[in-house]
Image (cartoon, rainbow, N blue to C red; front, side, top):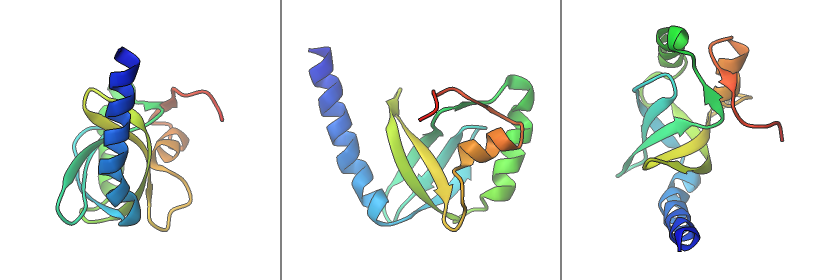
Length: 118
């Protein structure tokens, strides 16, 4: 039963996210070191950066770095990885950038990877 509910939840999430994939989302706010508020033309989403973790002592530096890298209305591509606690987990790549934000935070020394290498 739990797997069916999870399957339905993921299917619904993909239906909601599909419009974001066809139109680039815009960053509305950096809320935390791994949490962004993004939106398209008529919806807002809370998106947690997938596969990274920021240590408590690096939280403020990571927020500052993200705010500098992602000014309001910066367009981004989302690659959904799942959901957790009602938040979309995604790899977020600014339009025109070569790497996603999670990898960039790891390269800056502000985060570490939590997912196994592909």
